[in-house]
Image (cartoon, rainbow, N blue to C red; front, side, top):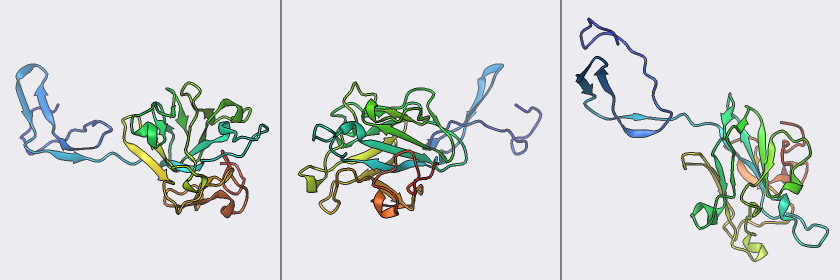
Length: 225
């Protein structure tokens, strides 16, 4: 700390936690004298910058496989980083309504060291058989083989569901609900942001963006991220 200055002059650069709070105070102390210390008179607010990572596309109900039943490995969630730098996803989670309530374990937890560069998308599939060979930013749900387990839509005699992307600190980064009779779910039709790769985009069927029924790991027009 600077010395020989009055209380009204001088400047010091602080490194503050990457957290949000409305009850922050600063405490200063003399390293040589434990009895010399002070705490700011009032609380102030820290606002953590919002990272531009969001759910861009997901498939709630897959097509039938060779056995004539839905191939649930094909369910997926695609998240996109629209920010200017890479984001550390270590400890982030994907939930549905049941797991977010605490009734079951998270559908997927990103392992330590998982990073998502700017302008890239990361896809979490429900099962290992769906992960494309050689895909750099893709994995499958690591919840002991249970998969993503998204519920069917109400038009499919289900209850619908909510897809959550949750930070390592437990705060919700993004979510989308299809727990409504007005939102139909069709096998093989993914939900996609429209405009694609925009956090402000409304939700639409991927096919309405003009290329395919679903485009995990690719832009809605079929091109690479």
